[in-house]
Amino acid sequence: MISLVLKFLRIIRRALRNLRAGLLLSFADFLGFPLWFIKTRSGTRPLDYSGSLSTAVGAPEYSRSAFSVYQPLARTRWPLFLLTSIPGQINGKLLVIGPRFESEFYLARGLGWSRRSIVGLDLLTYSSYVTVGDMHDMPFKDNVFNSIVCGWTISYSFEPEILASEIVRVLRDGGIVVFGVEVALDDSSSDIHVPKGDFRIQTRGQFEQLFPTFEIVACFEPAGNGNMLIAMRKPS
Image (cartoon, rainbow, N blue to C red; front, top):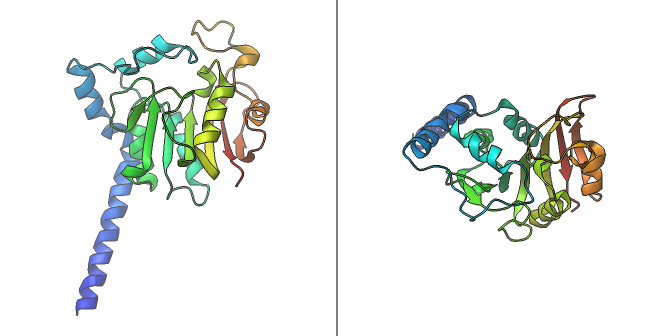
């Protein structure tokens, strides 16, 4: 009798866990809205707690103004989905570089990461998930993270070599880093202050140069303008 009760309780617990994961996956964007609304509409604006925006990161005012409208982008999900498709990544510690809203964190929890295993890093934030700091000088110890997601931020870096060295430093041996970038082959007319032309990180070849010892696990590179995803493994 006791064994039947325990078995029933395990089934219920598993069902609740699956229900929770489904809700997080389905409503990640909606779940991030309440805290954003409270923080940004109560007079508490997203702050730069580091005192000044990093000169190594382009478009600081654009990034700051983006917090004023709650508009999570669907493309921020893609690096997490790609990372999840690689075996052995969900159980480790995850770093999300450059999150804007909390939808990425809720999505990661729905995909299997625990709340305690997820850390964000950004210059500006209102979220308790996020450590305020510069991705070119990460406030983390060496070999901390099993996985890193860097979505649409490396193309904003004027010092990508320094960013790459920091990723190598904080990523554990055998760990995976997934990058997402917007490929803009002709960006000369853009008035946003970010690296342009050959200085913009947006090709497989550039990633291979930044991480010469890393293995490319997966790469989706458009023939022209579009969005690119690349997953790379640090040597064990």
